[in-house]
Image: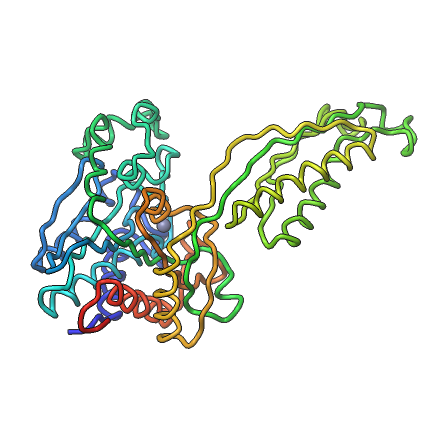
Length: 411
Ligand SMILES: [Zn+2]
């Protein structure tokens, strides 16, 4: 039997019925919880119907191997965990797609190479504010000791919570051995943003995850009486910060990236005083590292110029950064061809959110993702949705792309 998107959609309906979905307050598959385990148990029960070897690795990732003839492993997967009151598609769409890949391949006999299914543990990090648990353990980018004492809302330690699910935090990096021999990783996911929908598209190919530069901008002027100080004689730190925020929008538009001022704090912060000090929180993102560097330099130049014009000083203090993680050119070409064959359209876009696929790519494994549209661009909310025909097209394109990478008669 061929890859059947309708079977994958049926899996999604079953998982939503058991662990929360669109009509009952959203998904409740918070990682390491009973409902996460229930969703996993369903996935496992479906895997057990196939001629696959099932294993859970040291980081709690669930694997299933359909052994093939040739060398090299093609991996497919995503995550079943969700944020609290989350969407019915985030993560599980890719799990349903990967499961259907195994079903269709098993039905055709022995595949040309081994296909590995993976359900990564705790992609969301919703409980301990630490995303990509299982995939970062496998990629070697996790420092387990830094995680041990993280607490959830009820005061439970991460190390104890994962131990209750059979994960020994001291050994999670051993999951890295699972990546040996993998020559490609393909993940299907919802976009979680409005780009595809706004262009009337159902499916797109993902070029990589964007790089991020975060900084705190501290503008220093002079606090002064709001009544007695003439406008021309003010050194208003808020106006300097606000003009910089407006300039950030121009920087983003000029370079095709995004910039956000996510917070602003004025001191003394009272209605009767010109703000002497204003701090703003700045986030800049782009897929291209060199362009992101230019955006960062543009911000520094603009803030310095504007602060001087307002009679203020400014210091930009870095908070956090991550490099862009580009996906593999050959796999991107294969995915784009599959999307074009299925939908008649070819849109490639970067991902703003990080994904398990980014960790796999950081580990040096050629990687690509395919996105379905997201209705109103909403995700991490119970309203998250995608038209079923878009899901079916995305699944179909994903199945074709995997077939082409695995090779053999259908390639
Ligand atoms: Zn996700």
